[in-house]
Length: 284
Image (tube, one colour):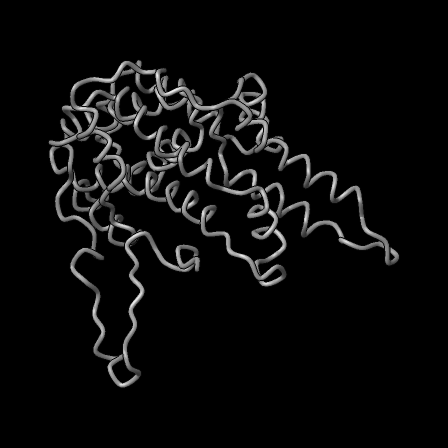
């Protein structure tokens, strides 16, 4: 049974008698962390963090069956099938994005926040190096979240070199001309690749909703061809096995691995925004 598509990152599924429904209250861990984990992961190599994130993402991506893309596009109710693996992969994207926002918003010291931005830009660069575009985009989108992007004092202190890196990375998210920048980047890569899954799903949904499945009681094969081409892109990304030797492991790989697989986040945008304004109040 897939429940991740209906729950937030910190959501829990409760079962109780109807008469106790009004007594249910969120568990403490559902509020998210009250302190950041920078003291833990600032000691970890950015490359090691990106490598372990890529390993985990590849595991999740490899489990996604091509049929799940169809179920997601045409509606699970039409097939009576689950998209549990796809849901987990999408959930991971959201989790990494919120991790970036959470860590920045829980960092009360300005100089440390600047270091955090540098750290995330480095991790994103290594994710791109490992062709993990899913986590790459999750990190960049986390940094462009309003709760982070509004921290002008923090961004002003960021060295020019890192500002240029971030601007280059952000340009890859440019949606103009049907995300041309991202699509050109992907065409230059050789598999294995972990693609930006939300955009692939958007392509399929756009094709499905913009074209009839049947025309004059006949199957619209042009529509099916376009959807099949998107699924072939996923197949192409996985037609070579992921090489675990792309990064020379350090002694603390087990610690890094455990950390990236259990990211603690605040999944409430309002709470993150409030934290952001406490760090840097609105200028009058």
